[in-house]
Length: 414
Image 1 (cartoon, rainbow, N blue to C red):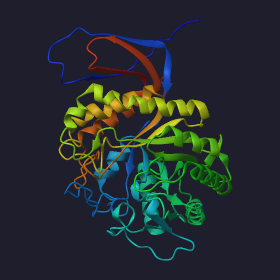
Image 2 (tube, rainbow, N blue to C red):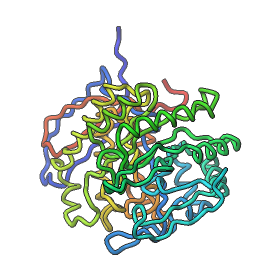
Image 3 (cartoon, helix red, strand yellow):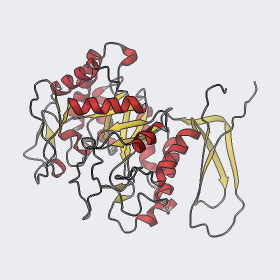
């Protein structure tokens, strides 16, 4: 038996609280991995938010939403192509308020401000003309696509419990949408069922048992329509905030082999108007708190063993678009890189950043498409960090963060 040493790039995050030089001893344990990530661990989102989406007296989305983003810009195309490929998740809060203009759906309304609507908006619509445009764009840029489905279609809000949506999910609109997608030969890597409907929900919620029953319907629909197993998209869920009892219940109801990947969201910096945001980003003790969520999700995965493991399918740091003059700056990298490092050590297979463009947390400027600092952090991770996660021990100030992966293999190299 012999041991082959593999060069491993290391991410070192040295926190600003270290104000003097130190000797640091770092030991990388290369004999065995502690976790594995997906080949396309780095992921970004594209959101449905229209220009009218405003928080904290600002409206930072502009024309960055999926329905009005200008897909012709060379800077946008090149930013995506640089990853070769980039995993993109299309979805967000309004996906459960979305219909697809295909089949029996004849009208196609735009999202409009509506006080009593979900997240303050009326129902919106994805036309097949726009879906065609998006898929030409995805094909041209080599995107690996995850698509978030409307999991509230056919349900009604409970009259006795605010925010709870009841009744069975009605799959006909999704069936028609999938049939159109298949007829056009469009490639979808995976479908995620609903957005932030788990536990207490965000804007809306669905009972865990009901969700478990409905995701079985979705899985059977995918298996029926995508007849060839090798091209069959995976089914992901629930795409919401982790609550142990809810997650366990829905997986017990759905059973093994239904949900291929267990997805959850992380916004551990709190609301985007928090004036203490910078201190949170630079406080390792604060950032450590989210490790309990990663551990909880990892424990559920070990219990139910979905094929694709756990995914962070949305994480923007701060809620409601991020924080102006913080989320799009170099300082945010201390949060972002630390989160990717921490998530990978807890065997999270994919980490989706909210968002590629839009809000204050976009990796690209919403009007010029010029990359913000975190774009380069994402690109460097994607190009350097392989799937094998190694254990690291260090003798130093606890404020020093060290993460190690084996180097990403290049074509022609062992």
